[in-house]
Figure 1 (tube, helix red, strand yellow):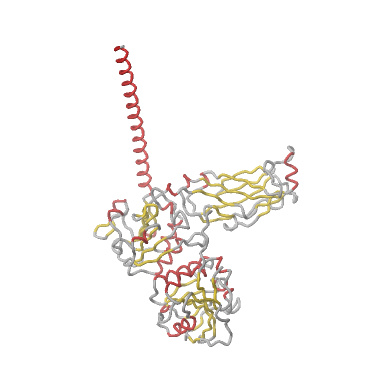
Figure 2 (cartoon, rainbow, N blue to C red):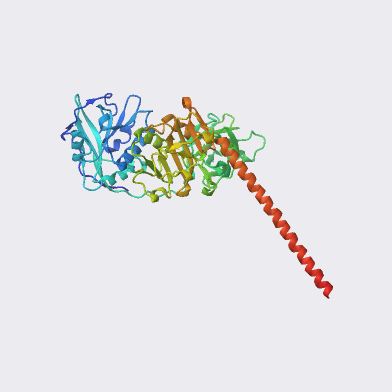
Length: 533
């Protein structure tokens, strides 16, 4: 459980802070914000409802990371583009749902500083609902502040479901964050977590809906994958298991349109009626699509309501990835093979928030972010680059740590040379390779050819997530068209494989010659000894 300290209960008579801004939104449709148990529903952006998160113009990177994680979480459960992260200087009006994040005296707006001061605590992260007076009306906003900068690392209280369910009252101070027990079954996903509910198929309804679930790219060719089904079947189907004349009752599991048949007459029913069936998935199931689509269909039920099959939402998708198979990272593995692996993002002195928002969206898998450390290039230490995937925003010109001799893309006087990889007329580009500071992890660099502060255009990043190419360089060409070096990588891998096979053949040939020489020598010595006798 979270360590919460309830400091007070908000009263409607509390003095409101006048922020001298106009209200820009619809009339309250889901009641006034008064209790933290209204989170996140109250802050979900809809077609008619906007959400804004306001932070100081010059936040610390820890605070910015917290604001980005919160923005990313609410964006993923909201209508498109309805959640905005704003610097205070960008705020022209107060939207329907507003969250203010900061520390005392960081804002230029005196009213925002007053809100922070009223919510400030000496120790812990404070969440408080406060009233504000606008030019036309009064609204309540959520204020998030902390005793010091490190408290913002507890932002998971607003992004992790296990914590969100425990929010209550109008003011909470989170003094100690519990450690979330790490899952040991990260390669096991339940139907429920995939958005697939428990389903009953019968003669009246023989097919389920089609369910899609985003999966990161894995080296599928080296992966064993299966679906473990938890079923129950009606007594009529059980009694027909011995019959031969009736049509066969069958459950068909369609995965990316590849059918997998389960003969319901041959399944084994346990005493409590549960049936467990393991369905291995063929390699043909996995294409370049970033989504896995699942549908269940029942055959042979003859429109009979007494014939049914129940599929429980505890059924699982199981896959095993051997990390050692990732000898060379490509964008086929992007965002990254495992969501539980941490990511360090290194930013230059000058960068756009929009680039970071895009990268956070890119790293999100099923509304879950990995643990992210955000650090400035001047402050980064080598230990932060170990035991972690690393992303650099900007290239060699912006980051002294990037050395030409270890990069997949070479730079001439800090200018990227993409012509050697067959590219020209490039605006932005990205490359992925093994992390030079820790070969078990990946290094990704987002850079641009021309002088700019934008390195990760939204459309370019969105294309990377669904690319699936076995390429380590992707460029954003003219007209926003993507080009990759997949052909070069494939050819290089093929040549390496052929060379390895030749070496293996040569080694076998040498071993055979050595063995023949040993046998010949033994025969010679034996004959010589025989003559002496």
